[in-house]
Image (cartoon, rainbow over all chains, first blue to last red; front, top):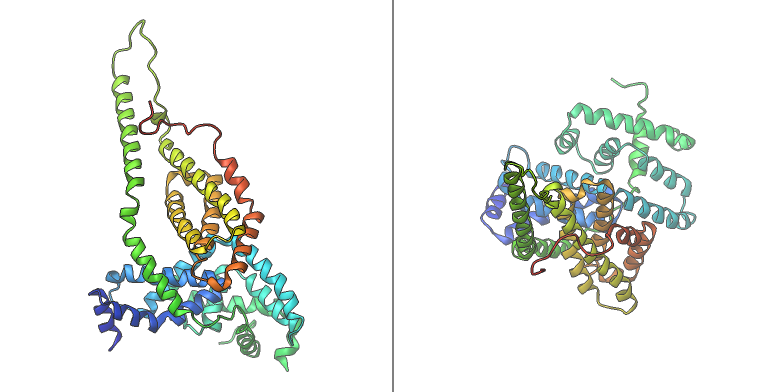
Length: 180
Length: 216
């Protein structure tokens, strides 16, 4: 069954079709939510809210773009608004995680690099960080990112370029890693 | 065209390294699906659940409207030369009055719940009941956040803190394997943000400044 038919059945109240649509997209939504939130409970909360909203307003999906593009627009809205709300709490979580990470990373192969990379990505402005994670880590195209974030494709490219430039400066101590 | 600051070697290396940033665990799809189904059902029933709240709010709003009406009507009457002073109407004087009262009642309920939450943890009360109560309060918290009661920055900050705590508690049922760790995190979070002291200081001392239904 193609996705258009699936969506028609969901609109008609078919529960099995809802589940099929969910199964087809949940991995990508959850992965993006997790990458941006860095916390399993938050990622689950955002993923749930994304699907609840998507099912609730499926009648407004006109099919001008792919369903996945429309869904990722909802995902980024839910996640970014949610993260704004939980910023203070998230900071506490990050501190706790960082405290745990110190103990863990000492036993790993490249403890400083991983810690510094995390710190550098966390320090990026929200827009840069979102574009970087969507493009370089989760493999979204600039077109998809542009639609999801409501920005021009060129803006997405520019933000990615600036994000990489900032990360290169932040990780300059490890230049030997990529120049050799 | 390649810009001066671009470095393809770095970009390739970075992509590989960044894979380790916030690496997602396997998608808990079944668990999330069950919660989505339950939450959608609950939201569709919310109108029924909120009836007492809506009735109360509408009644209070009606009292407020009548008060304003009387106030305006009396303001247009000729002033008595030696008449008694016209009484002012608190509700008409402060349009946010209804919301402040609702906020006070809500804060009292939340304080009672969070105080009980700590005690319940020690006595090993099951998480499902706590999660259910937290969800109810979470709904009200979100309504409060969207109401004029949240216009005050301090109240908004408090409501946002409470929302976070209640979200965490409402998740307890769904994550049974992480119970102890999660409850520890919640109580640590509450301690660090001083939620309970802030909550208590936000509740005005003395009776709520409105006559409740049935009061003489």
